[in-house]
Image 1 (cartoon, rainbow, N blue to C red):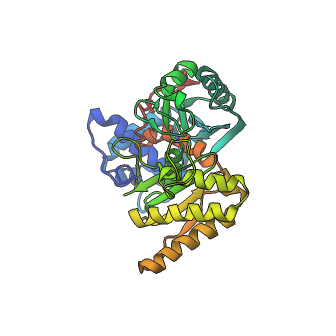
Image 2 (cartoon, one colour):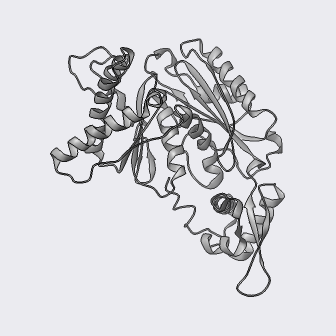
Image 3 (cartoon, rainbow, N blue to C red):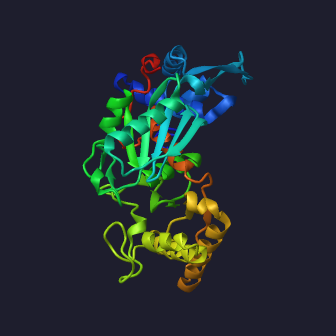
Length: 380
């Protein structure tokens, strides 16, 4: 994810931007890892004065978010004290509410998963039962650890700003349900909600800061896309971007759960159901090639449990379709195709990252972020 506004941006020495400046410092501490970073380097990279950096790091150390990591030789004078992030000072919970399965993860401040749990889920059950299951899973992976919040990812469409679901494909009874508020009331935690594909794409982008534009195609119980364009997660003006599975490939094709006919999702899942991997790959490849031709993206990343079952076949097959299109179009080097790995796990991991983003100065846009710099004792 493009974090030019955090890593290389200029901090402001104004009281109203204390949170922003601390987030700049925290992000640099996270990037530095165990090696750490000196106060002088922090000042140089943020544009803050050494005095401002000293005040911020003193406060972060007092809150347990940063600690000393030794000393580094200086070009003159005494050795520089090096600081590092304390990963276990706080955590985030990520939930993936799929149509038939619930995955819960706990990640630390460095984004490293430290606990995970998967259990059956019936997304068609009454809402209060689904919310109860989600809250129980979050509590199970959290234990007694201090957490900043809970990120939830599930099939769309939905309103990520208000945390309200729309007519989830195959489950229209969720239309208008305020999932964010319901889970916040149940768990007592700040909650953010987003589409499964958006969460996964967001998490994958954070692994490669400053990386290229890409489309994440998730094939599991459904089919959707998460788009990272211009270094940012692209949701669209009405948060409806990424409904990749419901583009029509066959006008008189089979009925899809969305109400349309010949959708790529319906065609692809039908092929999977009858064990025809070659046809599923061909259909997915056709859709991916359409997306590449429309957006001219740098790469395609495949994920989801169905892809995980035969990664080589899906990567090879989708790549072949895209390469064939590139040859016919004369557009030169074809778009690379890779795999996210981990089956459905990138969705839950990305959901947790939606919570952590504001802590480090990023913007998840999925709801009101928790105050990352207040004492976390009350969240323990």
